[in-house]
Each structure stands twice: as C-alpha cells, then as structure tokens.
Image 1 (tube, helix red, strand yellow):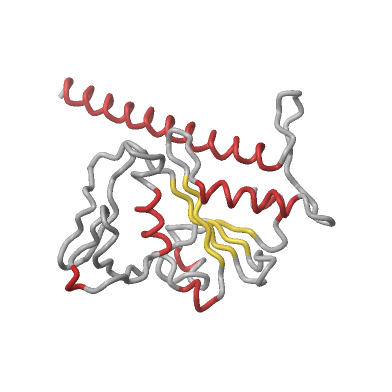
Image 2: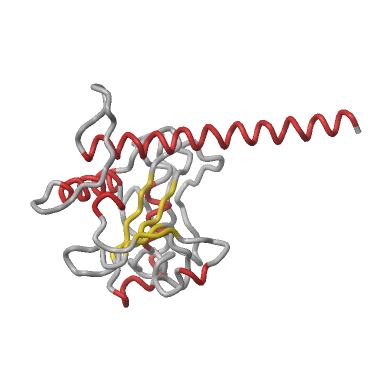
Length: 216
C-alpha cells in the first residue's frame, strides 16, 4: 500500500540489524519507513505494525499503581479494540503526564487521577519531524479506527491529480477496484492468514514435543 503511492524510498527495518534504521529512530527498530514521504511537511513516515489477539491471556483491571500511575484497562467486552488499541498506542506513541502523583492512579470511572509520562517506542520522531503511523489489526481481522484513517489518507493521495497509483488490482469482476477496499482487504487477510499459520506452526511444535516425549 505504501509503495503504491510512495514518492520516496521505502524500506523495512530489521531487528537483527537495528543499525540500519537507527538514524530514523534510535530506541526501537522501525517496521516500515518512507523517506520524505509526508506530503505536508516533507518529513519521513515511520510505520509500526501490530497484530495482537483481542482475546488476551491476562486481564488488566486498569487500576494502575502508586509508583507508575494509571494503566490501560482490558475492556474488550464493552467495545471493539478495548483490549488492544489503548495498550499499543501508549506503547508506540507514548503518553503525556496527566494529573499529579498525590492524586493517586487514574480512575477510569471518573477520569480523575495521575497518569505517568511514557516515552514510547519512537521518541526521536519529534526532533526529526517524522510522522508516525500505527497499523493495528486484530488477529480476527478487525482494523482499528486509526488504521482505517491511515488507509483512507493513502487512498486520497492515490486519487489526487498527477499521482501514479502503482496498485495491482485483481482482474476478476469480484475484485475491488478502489484503493481503499483493495488494500484494506489485503491487510485484513494478511492478519488473519498470518495468525492461522502461526497457530498451525505452534500445533506442529507441540505435536513434535509430544512425539519426542512419548518415544523417549
């Protein structure tokens, strides 16, 4: 999707070689980047991708602690992305301090209390004028509102006058012909299929272990 309308160099980070993207962000390896891709500022675009499961293994009540302030709560039973979006947005973007330590941890029911400053994984973006996006798709196929907004932004850019859309659309009658639908379908498919492949791999690992244990 990014390459389809890119005006600068596009690349992927490598956790085995963090020095390759250290100039873009020193704390955390960048997942995807486009040099000079922000058409509004001319800055670089850094993209972090997350595909968490909405059925998280541990429940977080969001009560926080006296030392660290408020904490994100697991509320996926109340609304979509309630177990994932806030958690990963704080991790990636960071969070400004709110309130005072003597107020006690944030109380989600009242909105009052202390939230500790969190630096986030991309602190260098402010000094370097980079734009940071997070593509968050749950493993069941749900796309967060922020993710849908990012795809819409690229879709608007693709339809602008003079812009070349390099997307390779499907040839069948049922294939989507709009930039947004095409790339959203592919993003969701990648999340679901990738998770299914990982499950199958883990099942095979357990079967191998059980076979080894039974024959030992």
